[in-house]
Length: 316
Image 1 (cartoon, rainbow, N blue to C red):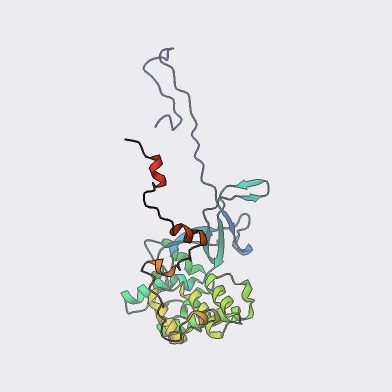
Image 2 (cartoon, rainbow, N blue to C red; image 1 turned 180 degrees about the vertical axis):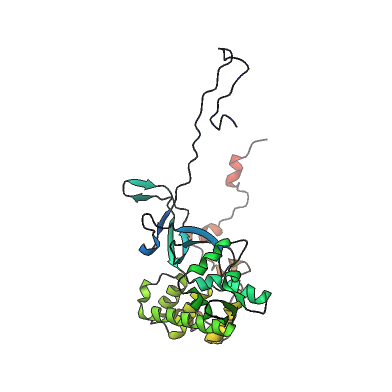
């Protein structure tokens, strides 16, 4: 351990040829190469400004730890950090450097109320009274939740989904499901309206692209609403997902059958096979008529004649 720390190992007495002194060895610890990250320009800190931090918070949909970016400064913005990687080995060229880590990270802005939603729900379940926002955001496992209080218009945003009590200086909040559903419905409507004005070919979602490609027509309003609701539902705790679908009236709407699906959907009783293929297939092979030579050979009397194989057997 002392050698790894770069110290000399001293022997008893003066060093001698039979007792050499160990040389100093420098141990370097290199950090793994960081992946390339794409962020909006406003999320990149200026020289001398407050540093942008990568923190771990609980994902509001799955409840599992996830990485988010919190910008510095008096007004905090939140970005979800998504990492795209696969088993293919690749590198990045950045100016005159080569980055061996071929992963790609993309930061996308996320509403801080969605991140605070599990905490708002927990505060309501633990106490029926109104709670101050800084107490709601107090989490021992993820202390960075407290930073959400510095997001722009955070008090107004939280009031969109909560009942509010108090004064301008001191406000307490309690989650209201009805207000929350209306707030989420507005988000779904905005996503669906954006999709409707966009080119479908530019949407890269596999589920959406396969549905629209199979239909070979412009997506209906119901299809757009279903997809938009799925996007928002990814950031919701499971307890609120079903409520959102009921608020949107999507639970009782059947999925439209595409032209491709119509070709494989049976419209009558299922037809049984006409033959039993589990039995031997020898019955299905027709017998060939004997040739002229075979007919002549069949008329020859072979009594007393040796077979061809008898000429190759061992003599006794």
